[in-house]
Picture 1: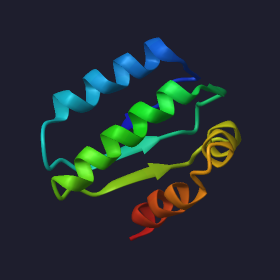
Picture 2: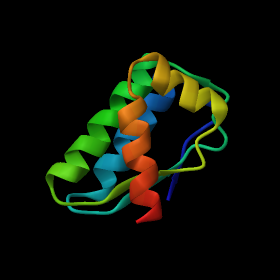
Picture 3: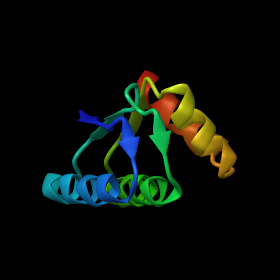
Amino acid sequence: MIGLPEICDIPAAVDLQARCLDLGPAQEISFSGAAVRRCGTPFIQVLLAAANAAKASGAKVDLADPSQVLRESLEGLGLTAQLVEWEQEKNA
């Protein structure tokens, strides 16, 4: 499980990208969003890119325990459907 940091800014996005690339293709990715207290659009872009790349290679992607801030950040960018999809994957 990849724990998302409290502050999800550009440096955190760079770190997330590196961590996801280290996993390699076709790996299941589970993100834990419980600690997120601030989240910017660049971080969400990297999160989405990592999730889409994993799904394209056949991997399951889920988001466990997204904080209210992370939920609001995703919803504010019109990504409610993505949030629901990740949560459903977690429960599948």
